[in-house]
Amino acid sequence: MDAKMRVMTENPLNAETPIERLRTWITDNEVFFKRNQGMFPESPVELGAWSLSIDGHVDKELNLSYEDILALPKVVVANTLECSGNSRSLLKDKASGNPWTIGGVGNAMWGGIWLGDILKKAGLKSDAKHVCFEGFDIPKGKAQIKFIRSIPIEKAMDSTLLAYEMNGEQLPLEHGFPLRALALGWTGANCTKWLIKITLITAPVDSFFMDKVFRIFQKGEDRYSGEVITQMPVKSIIFQPLKDEQFQEGVIPIRGAAYAGEDGIKEVVVSVDDGQSWHPATLIGLDVPYAWRHWEYLWESK
Ligand SMILES: Nc1nc2c(c(=O)[nH]1)N[C@H]1C(S)=C(S)[C@@H](COP(=O)(O)O)O[C@H]1N2
Ligand SMILES: [Mo]
Image 1 (tube, rainbow, N blue to C red):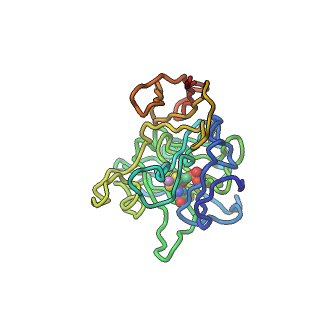
Image 2 (tube, protein in one colour):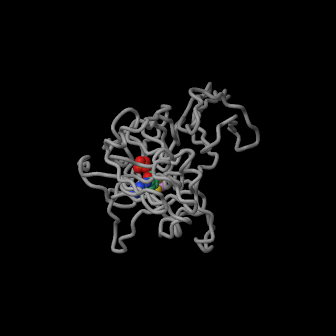
Image 3 (cartoon, rainbow, N blue to C red):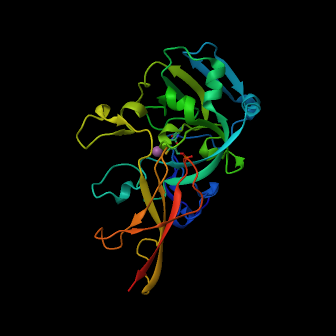
């Protein structure tokens, strides 16, 4: 792994992208943020020994080899992925968890197949309402709690990818080799890595990672009563200048990326006086579904 990543924990590996490396529209694989609840194998699984099973409320159970997956129509799509804990360390109210600054997000081109294509092959029973994903990473700690989560059938049929390539390379080990889910525009927790099993179920899965975490709730509230985190809400990060960087008076470039999950970005405004006045930024670079939009504001300071 690139030594320049900011490693928060080693076992399991949790590391954020150095801020300067967020400045390209595509985030390089070697510095793309890595977020793990459990331990993944130190070396890649033998592809011959790997398969993906699809079971539960389907007409026909499937067991697909890596070759079967490669034989399906390939798509390559952009997707900005963010951990829902990103920017946590910048909150005024302290929140527990990995102390992300703004590097828990990245944008990549992902190659793979539509999950909907496989689900159509399996045939959905009429009561199949949620799609549950299981990876083969090993839970950490005594509790042995696996990272198990599900997404609604509509999202699974409409815009969820099973990816085996990341930025033109084979999906890296840390990012879920050989296959991961990507619910496009939804937070990282909806994108299970190291997939081995997909189960069609009738309601959201009853699991620790569905019920106790990745929900929106306030301090002191019952976690289970909170809404499950799905799409990424609108947000912008600033990756230039860096925090505490000093300038002479003159033109100071302010640059960042804005993203809104399944929605596009229409405009970005910037304030350099604590919100008293706002200035339109220029949107730059590619404008592609599910990908962040880069922007720039040239601040003429005096
Ligand atoms: N199997 C498995 N999938 C997982 C996780 C995990 O711990 N195990 N972590 C999730 C979380 S919380 C995030 S933010 C993303 C991070 O993806 P990345 O490490 O490829 O950036 O993976 C998700 N998928
Ligand atoms: Mo996450």
